[in-house]
Length: 415
Ligand SMILES: C[S@@+](CC[C@H](N)C(=O)[O-])C[C@H]1O[C@@H](n2cnc3c(N)ncnc32)[C@H](O)[C@@H]1O
Image (cartoon, rainbow, N blue to C red; front, side, top):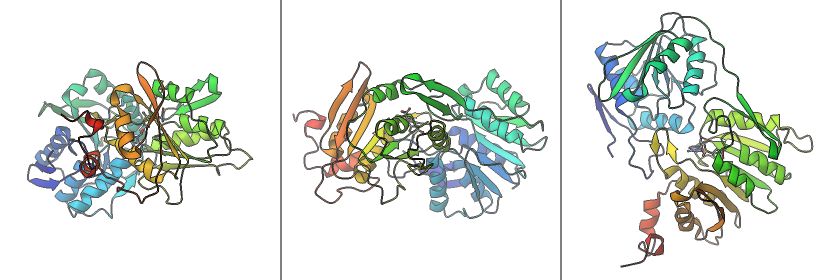
């Protein structure tokens, strides 16, 4: 996998975040290259620019290298993107101080003169982003949106026209296109959150536009909710919480517990917070004192003092459009590090993902709690008398290499 980005006369070193991850995925794609090529060919000057959905900083670092003083605001819903952009600016010794960092709900400044965007996979979220832009962009502001050609069709162009202004797509280059939209100056209102009920748990769930399980319970979450662990838990993490459904139900089952919700998506964290309040889950009238809500990459920045006795996890198996299990690995590894001795990691996953191999490797134990044709619920317990044997971002390959018998039964019998 290459980290050498080279387009027009720009040469950069770009890595995904975290850098030490076991995936063959590149930190940018041809749609990033196309957008930069377009800016170069049209001799774009350094006006105040908002960059949205820049996965790991290809767009931000290019603009910064074209002009270190280019006025930039960078908006992302994913913490891993924000950290990745900052990491790549630092690697390439480009200044990050003057950049205005925004999440997907912050008020957009009114001084934007140009917008650069990557088309997100989730078109409901995309429409939400366009509506937000419509609230601040003066008429005739140029908005450039790049994407794979196969993701751009008549209905995407109509969606852009409806939510921001007329749009047309460029010719195809490296199977990508750049859409040029010109804002029409009309202000659109923001959509309401989607709300649905889980009657058997007596819970009401609200989802913001970029949150997993948009309008119904995920089937993996459902089997997890039917097979929650038993115990007297006091400190619980809902890791990759989405709308918070697992942590909300944990609070119903273990009313004395303190719940920590963590997700890479800022909208997920906001949804979990709203759902906590909507379902009135604080006991003893201690409003807001029995839960925390962390926008983070797994447990990378978890407060050192937090030692959970239970972690609930329905891990993602893709990042953007790429299928990957490195996030599940990182979640399990960091769970092992943060759990108190004797604490439990309770995981749901598609059977074919074979999470038991990873859990066994890290925890040296793993029990199947329940399964059906498609999903399996696994539990691993932290039993350790020794110092932590690995770092926060140790990859699975590094751990395999450090094992005394890498060809042991986890990979099948020795020949
Ligand atoms: C399969 S969904 C589970 C959501 C929810 N817990 C449920 O069961 O319905 C996985 C969640 O992990 C989050 N996620 C993805 N990458 C992450 C990361 N690096 N750190 C924390 N959360 C992440 C996603 O935003 C998503 O909300």
